[in-house]
Length: 388
Image (cartoon, rainbow, N blue to C red):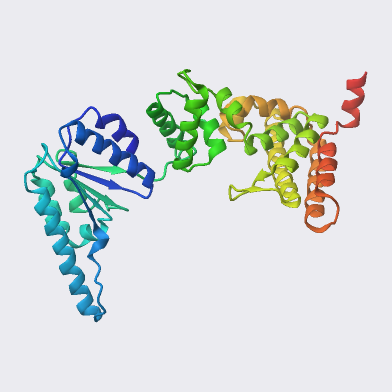
């Protein structure tokens, strides 16, 4: 069961005797565990009935040979499992039930798959056992025993921050992570839509802990207002580094030289996000990123222009994936500002700027200003038509 499905279904179902939290996203595991604990206390559980184990406590503190070491590890793992089962199979002395949590249970599942599988098939249903693991092979007998009748595997894997590779027709803002943001905003008594969630994601990156802190701050920032909008996020945090770069590329696409130069100057002043998603203030690095990004945008516009010149339309552009669906109209409008004859010349300007950024002592800011001016330049024949 995906974590998001678990969030939807858990509050509407009875507690199961066994839960397995699998995956590498520990924030999601913590969130799932918090939900189970809350339900445990609401259903009559007490603090004394909350018992925790750690699967890593099976290690030996003594120096022994490898064979002796393996035997010692097995004995200790077996002893730990016996302690866990003793707790799970006995009625609580305090409260209505016990909640037994086993962190880092991967090694226990490997060494004692049969015993744990047998327990899952016939659990002591008064109590609840939670096994936290990094991963589990769904083909194993143990995983198949977690069928949903006696137990369920909650998959707490990293969430896609863009539509999954096989979901080719979805817009950029429709992803697992944006859907999680919408769900998580409810814990702060706020609502969001997918576009607002994507706007927040662009500013925070994909760390769930950072997103959580930003949602907390945003909920205070908007006050009694129920919905967090894109405008609220923009007022709270300003334009993202990615948006500033996209705005620059849009200005170049519209051949708006003055706006594009001002936007480039701002990027040199406030820094830019690099490929590692960290902010750099190095002028040469910023200049190279602008050149590379301009090259990509001009390449896309050239492709769109060729489709339009051969009688193609918006649907053909989308089918060839030359532009994302939310931005296709904007990209078509930009492509129509160019003609194929001038594109090869624009290409030469970008190659020259790239070489200058990497080899010359010229100011990176000046190199970019000159490049923008050349990319936004209208062909002479079109300029004369515009003037007349």
